[in-house]
Image (cartoon, rainbow, N blue to C red; front, side, top):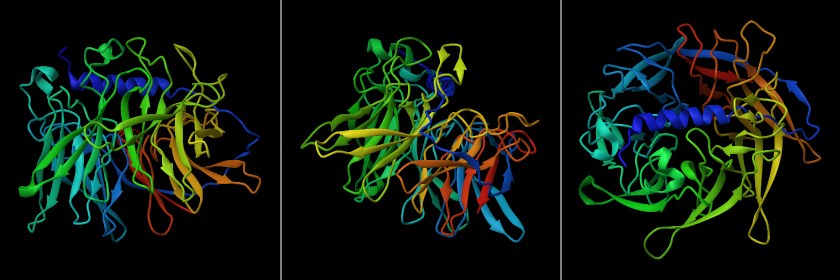
Length: 449
């Protein structure tokens, strides 16, 4: 069944936005304000020479420069990759690559990643082969590599072009990740299983793929798992490895209609087999109420526990939508048990008030504390409204967790932070907002203790 990857990506974004309207479970956790100093490093605009509305957070190179993507602006208005360089008195922005929507891709969403040699890898949700029938005139997306040259320019190489068939389409929400052998792993939210009744309205259920480098600079594509839209979910995203090299990720639930999944999502584990697809195991399925729902990616602590955010669930009296009470979201922990199962604990539930609400990005851990963003809540009584927050969760001696608001956005300093944060070596945090700032197209910000 032919589909438009661009429309599909936009629809999934609406799904996440709607499903993020959720509430929080309280476990007698105090909400306090522990403000940090916020500095706007760059104000995005919109035009041929400026990116706008970054959908994901930045990444550092070894020299301390920040890189990220924008889905709007640029020479062809198909998005850019930007670079922020620290200079005396501030940061200097430059565009290192303009997407054209053709063979090189367009509309990048996920944060790119670096290899040890300083090359940058990422995905673009459209573009590639524009003549394939599976994705209409937009193309099904690509995996790309950017390499710095002696002249200071960056050269793009397309590592793989998706067809919208068994290999999937629309690498939108998920990130790329390397294993220790240098193989790349990623996810597509669409394609494959396009005839499945559970995914017929979403143009396919999505896949997990691997790209392996071979001689001559080529990369082989390997299909690791095709999602059915049933027990294993739909629309996989946010992959990560644990210390043992096992691959984990999150997915939305099965679909019951055009806009919203009927199940609130799950966390899955993929393990290699002797040949063919990998074994997929669902380690936790969310209930969508007190335990949360629509999980983002997970991170691990040194003890092997997993932490993540759920965009819905929690306190069901708050954060309603046209579909009813959805909750404002939770921060959760998954702990391995001796019987091989995982135990889920909701560490904190948001109220969409001064503590924030609708956590859309992943978490970062620093000295045992967890940091993240919510695109709702913050200053409900201020003129700036609910611009979202950066929050911190600290573990108490009795095993409970206390949430503090590190920064609440007001608009001029940014609004609607939906990205995963990144920390530098001194503990400063960096992230992006999709709106606010001087032009209304978002900012790159820094938080210092």
